[in-house]
Image 1 (cartoon, rainbow, N blue to C red):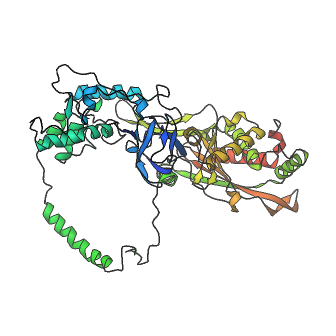
Image 2 (image 1 turned 90 degrees about the horizontal axis):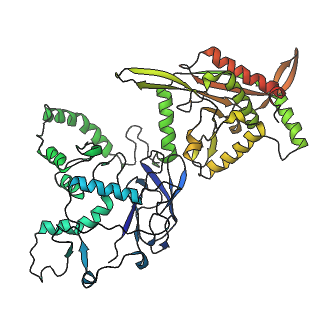
Image 3 (image 1 turned 90 degrees about the vertical axis):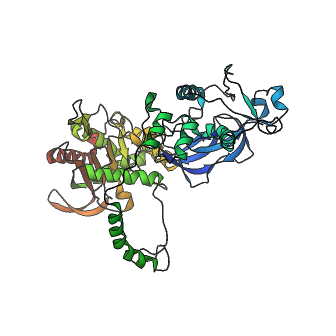
Length: 510
């Protein structure tokens, strides 16, 4: 009987431990080839296609669209086609058999895992496929001359008079299935357990392997580690019962009030009905974590200024009239001014880091960069994302406009790479497109500054002593006060404002 291949959700190369299943690209019964995309999954940063490391017939899909799957958990089961499976020995074909590997030492199992991993066990990197070309490889173990039994027949056991215990039967029938699911490491979860027997022992005795560090090589959890945990004396918490009784006395009245309401869909604090529950996951989860960290770690300050953008608006209108197909948008002009300003005030194009030295003492430093990766906020159906233009200081306004348009299309399709989304050094946020004048933006951690641009509207403005109607916008700079003082921030903001009011001085590269 052909053995199924179980493909586990791989590490997508972003340091993430989970992904949301967006859509299946195959169905049960479909015949697939190696490296064929089988599913679309949404990580905290983008939507990616997952290729299959196996060829054959789809036997089972492990998950439904919208479900969040952990890295290392089953994604799809594939049954190899007959042409891809090695011939079975004649004597084994006469009766249905179950392959059972002889018991191995922990060190041998670890080496087998590493060999399998190098051969391409399913931990593929997105976009790079699996090693070994397009053929499906069946991995077999060499026979051991010291092992008395290689094949254990499941049906004729009683006919031959061979006696087995119930415990032995249970282990033999599940060992092969466990081996498929337990030989791939799960990042951050049971990551150093190789042997199914060790994991089974832990399960039977209620030992939690999630936070255990093994005594074997590279933290491998061995049988002796589980036995030590099983034999460890239990420690009762001090005065457990009185504490539980006192806590129950405090909680019970509240519980009574909440359970007396119509259902669990009533908020106990407000007494109002709950009409929906939206899980925080994917991009929204990543944004929430990033914004919380920014506010909790960065001592930010904000400065702002109103700017007369009439000259810039007139310049762009003139260029658009001369060549409407190659005129940069206003955001590209702003980006050009920002990159020029960061050359003059490089303190705002840095990163503040804390680390421990060899003695354990904390040290802090400011990292300066040779170049500007300019991020810009883009609104998508999945939420607000910030792709970045690499080495933006080297680009003209026209080239910046091309990159802005390209990256905007990429992120709205959910196809941005981790590099495009996570490599920025400074962020530009044009919230004026939403019809607002200003905003005290939150810094895009771990950057140290963000510049916001409000809407451009007609306002009364004094020009050479005379009142006139001008195109005015508001610039808002939020910065990390640890990397610079207000004088530096104000100097940068004033530099960008002056460039907007007299744009031709910085646009000689058009």
